[in-house]
Image (tube, rainbow, N blue to C red; front, side, top):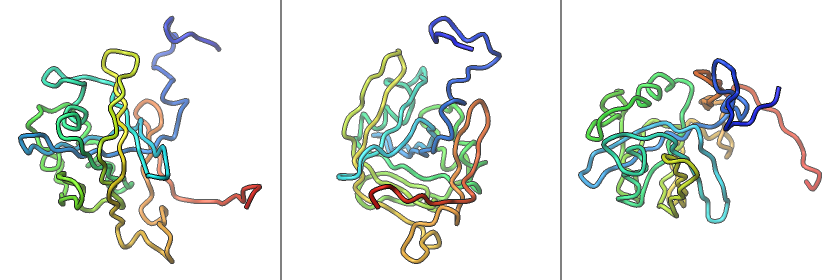
Length: 201
């Protein structure tokens, strides 16, 4: 099968996100100028640089009550900061509850019953019980092709690691089993690891 995206695929559902999978989930917390806290998951998310450490996520939909797409991007545009919270398997239902489209003033932490804590280097809330959280300052918001598509790039200014996830000096993902997005409404979790030596090791 071959198709051109602009001509359609003819399938019951778009296969694009299923092809590019699994994708890590950035659970992005932001705070608006009026101190409203927001929390939303994004699966177009990843690390993009080591030194200095930088991450990105992309927002691809819109809300009537917000400029620049979703609440997350609008808040970041206003304040210049955000926090990436890592999603563990046991938090899947809470994460899903924060994916709904709510009015800008709704606090998704409260809506989903998620305990919050304050960040250290930025004025923003974070998921208190997340395995890890990355405090970020905005590098830039990049408009992408398409009316509601924006990529947000941030520089990591602070890192929180949950103590039980550290084993012998290593951040052990099998402790919490990261949640990842597949296509459609499907997800997976990391539960086993294997290692490969690189040719230049």
